[in-house]
Length: 243
Image (cartoon, rainbow, N blue to C red; front, side, top):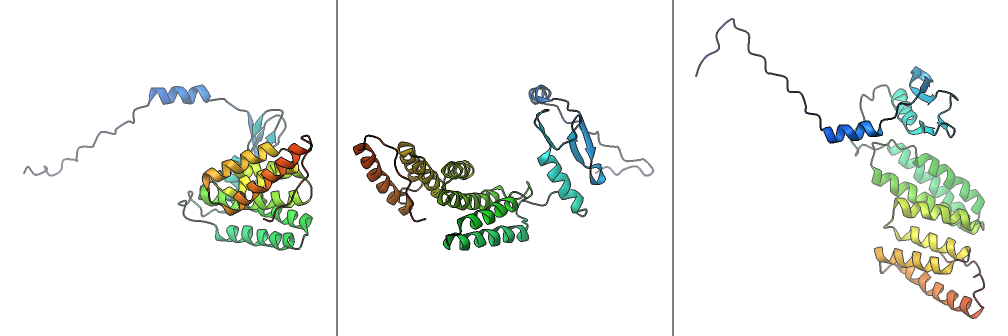
């Protein structure tokens, strides 16, 4: 084997320049849109729309909320050099969500639905503060549970439309969870929309055919629809089924 000649510098390896994918580059350039922005806040690390100096501007159709949220995390955690692995979770945040939700559950069981609603609102606000690099599955589970309970509280308060909005949110972020479809069906019954409620129950049963809650509610719905049919399709009364 040839030995390197003493005193000669080692030959430098050529630096490989990564090849640019022209298709991907074209997509990036097509979507690129320059935006005038102002910076401010601690460390000048927060973005705002230039004309109105607000974080979320409907006039300019700009929303820097998510970007500023990440900036805030790094500003308040100076030792955080880069996002940690997704399996590293903020246990205190999870505990805060659980404790606040449980307080709401206790109030709900005492029929203090308005007070329970306030707790569920607090728990939801805490849940959405989870950093974007943490487990999305945990985020969906925590938020969907809280919003599902909030839907139940709104239903008991007679706000069927609000209950429906929350139920649809639950279904959108955790589609295979039967509880979300159950909440949606209840809200639709409260609004007198029984055929849609039946469709919601059927969709939930596709994910869990033996779900006791949905199957029981399906039977009640069928009875209600028979009563509605006999009454000349009058709006069905709102019913409350044990959750």
